[in-house]
Structures are given as C-alpha cells and as structure tokens.
Picture 1 (cartoon, rainbow, N blue to C red):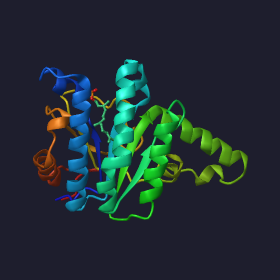
Picture 2 (cartoon, rainbow, N blue to C red; picture 1 turned 30 degrees about the vertical axis):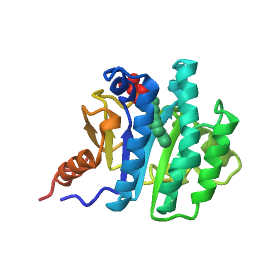
Picture 3 (cartoon, rainbow, N blue to C red; picture 1 turned 120 degrees about the vertical axis):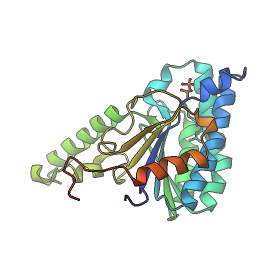
Length: 235
Ligand code: FPP
C-alpha cells in the first residue's frame, strides 16, 4: 500500500464551463475556483500533505481576452493580499513557479509580499504556478545550467536527473499525484519534469465543485496504485 503522497498537483480546469453552464460570466467561475482552492489548500494541510502545486495561469493563458486576463490578475492580487492570509496564518509557505516577464508590477508586488510573509512557515508548501509553462521551465533550467557550467560552478558529471531539480523554478520533490479537473485528458504543459512518475487522475468535476470528498476519493484509490517506477513488481 502506498503512503500518503508527499506532493500533489492540481490542474484547476473548468472554471469557465462551470460558470457558462449556470448562465454566469466566466469571471464568476474563476471566483468560485478561488474559493475551492482556498478550501482544498487548508484541507490538504490538515490531512498532512506536505506540498500542493496548482496551475493558476499558464504562459499560454495570455492568449485569452484582455478582459479575462485582467480579471484573473486582479483576482490573484485579491487572493494574495487578502484571502491567502488565512492560509498563511495556518503555517503554509507560499512559493511561485513561472516567469516574471509580462506580469504586471502590482501582481509581482503582491506575489513578493506573500512569499516574504510566509517564508518561515513550515507546515506545508503551496506552489502556485503563475505565468508558468513546463517547456519554458525546462528551457530556463537549461540556460541556468549552461551558465553554471560556463562559470565552472558545476561539472558535466554533476548533472543527473536528481540534481536537475535544483535548476527548476522551485526545488521540490517529484509529483506523486496529479489531478486534472474539468473533463479534459491532457497535461497542458504542466510540470513536465516533475510529473514523470505521477499517478494521474482525470476528474469530470469542474474545479469550483472540487471538494474534500473528491480529494479523499483520489487518495483512497492512490493507496492501491501499483507504483513500479519502470521496474517489475517483486511481491
Ligand atoms: C482554468 O479554467 C482555470 C484557470 C485558467 C484559472 C485558475 C484560477 C483560479 C482557480 C483562481 C484562484 C487562483 C489562485 C492561485 C488564488 P478555464 O478558464 O480554462 O475553464 P474552461 O476550460 O471551462 O474554460
């Protein structure tokens, strides 16, 4: 039987459809998604999950209408300044993964504030992927490695699949469980390096409806997943 996963990641998909199907504006779906995240982050902490990574905004999400991008950025600022305060007070350390370029100054400032405020928290980590792309992360890591090799800070033989994590946006352990809500069955450029041996769960539920019950179902199923990491079962 598998132990409780250390690192869970969620692709929070379906906010827009949740709203449209209810005759509401897409922005209402994002607002409801924010509430679902607040709830699930606290629950994950309560049951002992050490790391939760969430996909808040991809580099490709900039292709959406300016109105939707602006709404999401304002919602994120509101969350970082107000709502995540509760999460922070519970001992959660908040970190970000992604590129800073193209993000508005007020978003960067709110991100830096919450990182600073929670840097000494150690109950668990909430890694928010914002302006994030998995291929971009691998490209950025490759550039850092190139620099370290040039500056003779590392030797070629120091680079292994394990040491590579140090060059990613955050040096976090591999993902054990990846959940994607919202009916689609794809990775959408999310944490490609870290998801190598993740157990994947695709849920039909839209993210605003994702609750403790859904997470518990995933965790129950995960216990009995046969994780072989490319090897052969021995018992
Ligand atoms: C995907 O749904 C969701 C997003 C692009 C945004 C996720 C953001 C939140 C849950 C808001 C709060 C986040 C934080 C970090 C406080 P979609 O718009 O692609 O839905 P659709 O596929 O139904 O259109």
